[in-house]
Length: 126
Image (cartoon, rainbow, N blue to C red):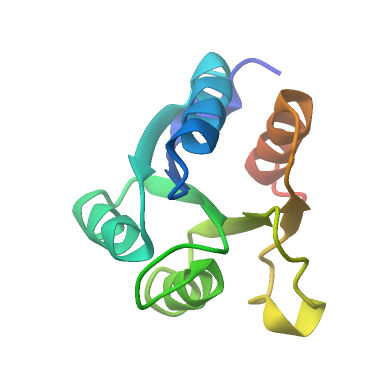
């Protein structure tokens, strides 16, 4: 597939900088424009500045008033066209805890898993 992922920006949200850098590197290698945020509040500010963000890949466990699930719910409400994928190495949420159409991938994930997930999102199969 010839870099269909370059059509929109991706926002990676994780308070652990090394984990965030890994996801950013993988997505950039796929030709994506990738933005970063270390918290849900920072992610919301970035989403408000950048209407071209189509995908958000967020950790669930983050410091602050809002965790990744709260962030996904807020995005679903305020930016319904943005797809959100959640991840965590500390918990596996129940399906009823996740916003509709927000899949979950457990940490540690591989580069191949992240790329496959991106391609599914771009192709509209999630």
